[in-house]
Amino acid sequence: MKNALIDRFIRYAKIDTQSDASNPECPSTPGQLTLANMLIEELKGIGMQDLSIDEHGYVMATLPSNTDKDVPTIGFLAHLDTATDFTGKNVNPQVIEEYDGNDITLNDLHNIVLSPSDFPELTGYKRHTLITTDGRTLLGADNKAGITEIMSAMHYLIEHPEIKHGDIRVAFTPDEEIGRGPHKFDVERFQADFAYTVDGGPLGELQYESFNAAGARITFSGNSVHPGTAKGKMTNSAKLAMEFHSHLPAEQAPEYTEGYEGFYHLVSMHGDVEKTELTYIIRDFDKDAFRTKKENIVTITEQMKEKYGQERITLEMEDQYYNMGDKIKPVKEIVDTAYQAMKNVDIEPLVRPIRGGTDGSQLSYMGLPTPNIFTGGENFHGKYEYISVDNMDKAVHVIVEISRLFEKQA
Ligand SMILES: [Zn+2]
Image (cartoon, rainbow, N blue to C red; front, side, top):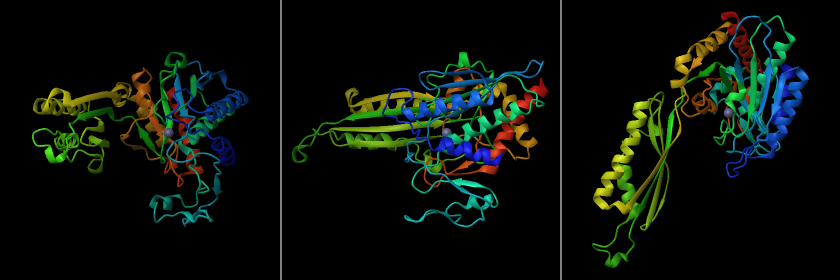
């Protein structure tokens, strides 16, 4: 099993599927289609049914039910693309058998070392088989580990027909890292009652709550006059912007918040006397607190308009995604079953809110409740990314066990 996982993962990791936010097409890069087409062939090879791939690279397939019981249709999803933060070209995975707990030299030439002194959680991986980068690229375990685990679980179920399950739907989707994963996802055609993204981090992660998210851009218009003769004439837009920011609660910022706490995050400020622009993201788990935060932005804008003139300030604000927990809580048994599945294969579930969004945040609001489960990967999106093959194997067993439990409970 381990060798098959390694081979499969490396095959996918070697294809450059980095997405590209600057390209409005879907998929945003051709490598994603290359991987999608490879996956279609492999799904066919292991005996999956109803294969489809559309022009946007969305791959779907079915493992048909092998029981007479009326079991809900479960979906499993992973994304084809890798992050844009660090290069994903020429990924050259390194396999470390029986990790000894010491420093791992990723790249001799450039002295790039993956060390437990920087990443203390490494010590928990003693005796595991690890896959790392060669120090020059990201690994892309986010999310090729998820694809590997779903493929391997389907293969396992096909080879073990004694494990009974209902219809299982599988989908691999493009452009998650640039926030467009679900945009062209056909929930109707997917026909699952609910789904899981296999896109989390370390062993045991189980997530069903995400932020509510909005973005705001506030533009301040000033009036530039020679400073020597500016009295009573100049309006300095940069100072208006500073005044605006000073009205926000200072402690509600990313660097002061954790757990279920929300924030206003000043993402960027650009400006001079004549024109200044502030960009914020607004995040909160609680729907009411989220609304209050947005109202606060509007109120401050209105008050400053009163003070300095309507034309001085413009506000653009729009919602980005919502807390999937509000859609998943009514069908909480899908989280409980994943929790039980982890327990059954000796994993201690780590149920934590996602301080961000996933494809599941959007899918849950499109009618497909979709919590997220772990892949086993660490340090996503950079050259220190690595994954334990032992934990990938556990993820495979969690997928199999979720499928088995829903049949058993039916
Ligand atoms: Zn991901």
